[in-house]
Length: 223
Image (cartoon, rainbow, N blue to C red):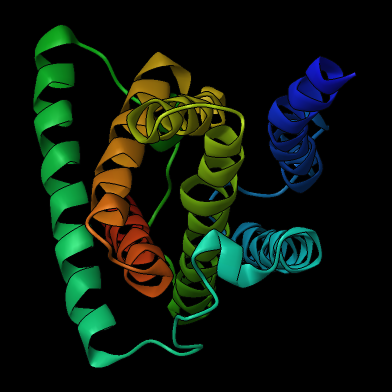
């Protein structure tokens, strides 16, 4: 009986992490609405999904073990000056990694099919929604992939590096719509974010840095 209890204690957190992922990102497995890619409506929908994901993940965290058990309880509810400074560092390191990968991809003739279909620069309304989408995406993805998923993997017996790697690979696979290049790029960026998480930079620094990187990337391709 003890063996069954021990097995359940190890598998339950992993199953919970997978279940939360399946619910929060269920839209990846469903038909997509016919919206113009990178248009105002597309960004509005992306922002709404990000907000819903944040709420759902935080609710599960609070009800399951409490936010403090995931390393969030002692953090300030609002970003502080140090968080903003660290966010710039996170965004800069992500941009550097993406640039290096882009150089290798150019030499190999690889590319991101999603970005290849990008249109003209957005107007002020679409730009504002793009910022909201970047923020919602940054917070929802960092909450799950750097906190919830890693915690679940750690409770299931994974070491800190293995948990970060598995979470990064799951993050990469979540970008399968961007092709092989998108999967590799997302996995690499996830490792960059995981590095900063391991250095003790909190959710605000990670999420805002993630959002700044996403916004800068979108601004660069929409021109």
